[in-house]
Length: 392
Image 1 (cartoon, rainbow, N blue to C red):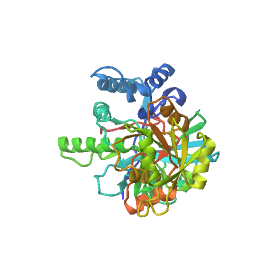
Image 2: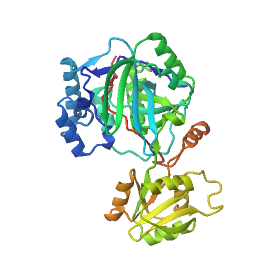
Image 3: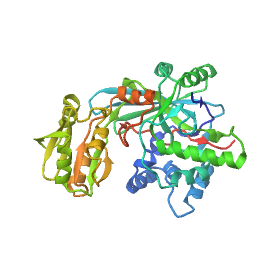
């Protein structure tokens, strides 16, 4: 089972979190970064999304160390865990109160167990995150893990020391610190009792593994801070997860050829342009939706067509379209998905349903992997709530 340890967190001295934290780097546009930089000259994007030429990573490190010298950033006196709560109303209108803990999660080798992927990942050609980690010697943004150990939510119910809160886009982000040794031990032992499934941040975790291997080679040691990485972990239970779908966009194929291929596996029934009500109906009545500039169709799986295939919409589509020379990309959000087709950037879209929590747990327990981009966990974790140093 994986180790999950407290650490002396680097935090902003201010409790005005709104000015200094940011969404994760991989969802930010250039305009988003402009807006965050304008919000504060100490916003974490100046470290996490550095701009400039080949020296931008060194500049990010210089900025971070300068903020430490100026006590814009401060280091906890004691090792701590950080409770991170996200309170919001999800897309189905259900009130959510997700509670997880920020700590240092063990970096394990592939196939070793303990920390498990939940879906196949696409290749990441960029070394941006690894270069930034080398330069700053810090974990800036967390991996999101799901603990299969029951009872974590109960251990996090009692508030910790309040450090700040901010509400953005309808989500209240609340930060609390835990330094009590007995409570730290209880949380650490609970998380060490079962596997952790990576929900979001597979690439971050892969970067942590690459960095760990570099440190091992350079030092000959296996006891440095690089053996662990910053992670947010909450319990894998229905009330602690908000999972939305990531829809499929198809290019490099004629929409009529795509429709013909889908018709071999699905009954195609003409319908109206998709709306939010369509997404709700998909979940209750069990169909997918094909959307093109020529029309919209419900996709009902033909009896027996997917026998032996896991009941995942992404897996069904991979099976149905396996022989076609097409390109698939992914988009979260109904309006954004439809716009890609209507503006001609995609030939067609297939709207899919969210994966349920039972299927996510089955994936973990059976050591299986879902197709790429099967799940979209919401809300996104903020960067800058804590930073973890990789130096001793």
